[in-house]
Each structure stands twice: as structure tokens, then as C-alpha cells.
Amino acid sequence: MMKGIDKIIQAVFGGLSVLNGQFYQVSAPKLASGESFDAPHPAVLQPPRKRRPAFGVVLKILFLLFSILLPAAKTLTASVGAEAAPFLKIDAGARAAALGGAFTAIADDASSIFYNPAGAGLMKNAELFLSHNQWIEELNTEHISYVHPVSEKLACFAGFSTLFSPAMNSYDSGGNKTGSFNAVDRMFGLGASSTGKNIIRAFFIKVITQEAYDEKGMAFAGDLGLMKNDEDSRFGLSIQNLGTKMKMHDEEFKLPLTYKAGWAYRFMHKYWFAGEVAGGEAVSVAFGAEGEFDLSRSAKGYIRCGYNSGRSENTGSGISAGLGFKALKFALDYAFSPFGDFGSVHRITFGLRFGENRDGVSAVKYNSSEFRSKPVETYQEPEIEQSAYASSPKAAQTALAASEPGTYDAYMEYAEDYLSQRDYENAFIQYGNASKSISVDDERQVYILERQGLTLIKRKNCKRAKRFYAAAIRIAKKLKVADKNVVNAYSGLAYCQEKSGNTDWAATNYKKALKLTDDANLKTKILKRLEKLAE
Image (cartoon, rainbow, N blue to C red; front, side, top):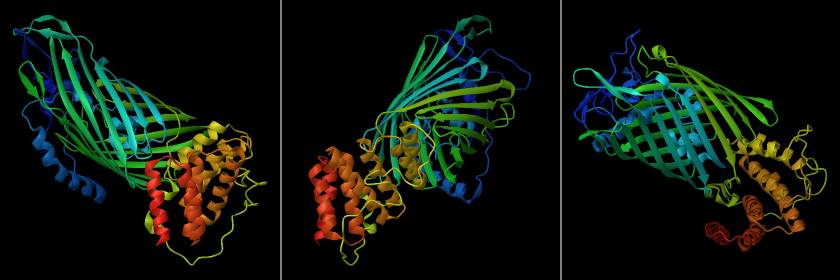
């Protein structure tokens, strides 16, 4: 299980393979200090890894879990010989690389599909990811991915990666140079994620090709991902490259099966600490830390560092670092990784989010255990909370709203980010800032008020949430709006009324939401709530 991966340096073609009657040297000399060689295919550059013990109780548990999963994976992929497509092991994103590769549990941007496809389920907006990696020995890798949230539970995604190598020399059986050729590796895949209550499951189906000289190979593989997302911590599992063998010149080579388990914790909603254990041909551990700081009201900066134990003594210490910048829906990341005798590796990645934010958890979808019966009390439609509003539905003019000028998009960007991170207090404040930046008669106020109501419910403050939902409904009536935000406002108000024991008012508002929505799933959920109220 833990054998070394020295055979990988024989390359995907099996080392000194006979191609068209000639020998083509694609394996490298020993990677000793001071030696040089013509740039080989990336398969020859996989350094031997040393087995390291698991660390701490958490990673011991993770290792135990994968010791259970590994036999089944090995059974499906077992073969003898070198591995094909080792470029699949190269870090795709600058953020993940700066964290030492400890990204299986964090995985909250579009690069996640290359690490743990379950991360796509965390995405609130459609996101495009582009990456350029100036790797060792003039090798370059490019990665592209796109994640599209289809609904509250479903996200679809696609990814493409390629590696270009410089010209490599070919030799005959006598060791005489006969020419040169290039090698190109590619991967294209499609996948989807499904989100349940705090659990995300995903798959990623891939087609992998390799070309060198006149030889071509193809294989099919799949990645499986699982993530448990709690308020301040995440736990992730992934199995990558579970698939067929690749055939090159009458020889078959297995894909680089990799399995990972990671845990990440966020402190003060700004600092990530992550660790993971990865296995395959060898076991390695990785650690990473990320800190966020404000550059302005619409821009954030990031500083990162990491460590990965899976390096040989000639390929660097395993330490990495990087910087990040995010403004509105744009993100730019950079990572630097010393690579020992091979120099340094520089990565630059670009991310762009766009499109409508996918719906958050609907107010009628909370766990049924939260709907506790209480003595019926007289209920009156709540008035606007004067301490938080200047007048009637100016909900966003809260005492917490910042007085400094800003843009609606900037405030909404912050609010949606905080909401996705479950930082409900700051999300509430930024929604208030966004509301203050637009007219009180703007239709967008309905959405903002409904979101503020949701953040208050999450903070177990239904009494105040009712005022925000009521304000959203009043503005919607005034502007004659009847969209999904209004449906959510009625549902949220009904939920708060039900929770406080006002079953008659709750039933009335559930029925109003039912009348306005065309969503079959939501109708089913509302009908179930009404049935429960009628019991």
C-alpha cells in the first residue's frame, strides 16, 4: 500500500520504450544535485515520497477512514507498472498551492473541482476560473473551470487542464540522438454536486489524453467528493482518478489514484487553518493557513502559507506562500513554491463570479425540530422597528449601517460572502448598507429585507425577523411585485409566526406564499407545513 513511487520516473511510456523501432528516452537520470538533463515529460519529475506518520487525533481518524475506502479503490485500479497522466497531481490553483495543497476541506471557489468536486456545492454564484502555472523545467500547465449553480441543491461544472512540455530528445538503441518531439497532456471533465443538510456530494467524470511523438493514449476516470459544511469548520473527502488504464504502444498504465481527507477551521470568520492527509503510492500530509484583511469597503486582501511533506530532498522543503486580492466579483491569486534543484514555481489564477446569486436556504426548509408548538397568543402584524429604521419600509437604514459612501454591488458582494460563510451578523450589516445605497422604492429592497430576515432567523431572533419580512411584503405590495423574494418573505414570516405559536397567522401567510409560487418542490414543503399546523 505504501510503496514508493520511484517507478513514476519511467514516464507514462514505461521508461525506455520501443516506439516505431527506436528507443525514445523519456526517463530522467537520478535527480542528484548538480545534474542536468533535457527537459523530460512531467512523468519523470515525480520525486520519491517518504512515508510520514499521520498527525494528531483528527488526522488519525481521517487516515482510518481512508484505510477503509482504499481497498475498494485499489481493487478497481490495480495494475503493475508506471502511472499515466501524473500531470493530474499538479496543483491547479494558486490559492490551493499557497496552502500547501491543503484544500480538500476549504474548496470554496471554482478551482475546487480539481481538488474536491463537492466544493462546487458551496458556490453561490456562477464562477469562471483561469490558471497559468509556470512549472519546473519550462513545463507550463493551464487550467480552466466553470461552476454553475442550477438551484439551491444542484450545481453543475466543467473543467479542462493541459500540460505542454518543451522539445524532448529521442535516441536510438545505441544512445544516439535521432531528433526531438513534444508531449501534450489534456483532461476534460463534467460533473455535478448535490447539497443536503450540511452534506455535499459530487462526482466529476473525466476524459484524459496523452500525446508524444506518434503515440496517443486515452483513459476515462472519475472523481468522487464529499463535504460536511458546518458554521466554522469543514470536513472533506475525495477520491481522484478512479478509472481505466491508459494504453500506449501495447502497454497499459494505471492512472494516479489519489485519496484525500481534510479538515479546515475558520477563526473569527477571517482566518482559515487547514490540514489534510493524502494517499496513493505514498502518504503525505499538508497544512495551510490563510488570513483575510480589508483593503477598502469593496476590496479584500489575503496572505497565505503552507507546507506539504510529499517532497524529496532535491525538490524543495515543501514550504509555499502566496497572496490574494478580491474586489466585487473579481479575484486574483498568486503562489510561490521553491522547488529545490529545479528552481521555483510561480502560479497565477484569476476568478470571476457573475450571474444571479442562487437562493439561500428557504425559511420553510428549516429542520422540523425547530418548529416547536407554543401556547397560542394574540398576534398583530408587526410594525417597523423604529430603532432600526428611519420610517416605514426603509429597512436598510439600520443603526448598524455604515455612514461612509459605497456602491450597492460592493455592499451586496460583502453581504453574500458573509452569508455564505455563515457570518450572519456581518451579512445583516452589509445588507443594510446595500439598502441604504439605493432608493427606498427600489424593487431590490424586497430581496434585501428578505435576506436580513433570514440572517436574523439564523441568529435565533424570530421576533425581530418578523419586522423585516413584514417590511419586505409591504414594499412588494406598494411596487406590485410578486416574485420568489416575496414568496420567501411570506414563508419566512409564517415560519416566525409558527415558531411563536401564532398558528392562524402562520397558516394565512403560508397560503399566500403557496398562491404566489410556481415551484413544485416549494409547494410540497409549504403544504406539509400547513398539514402540520392543522394537526
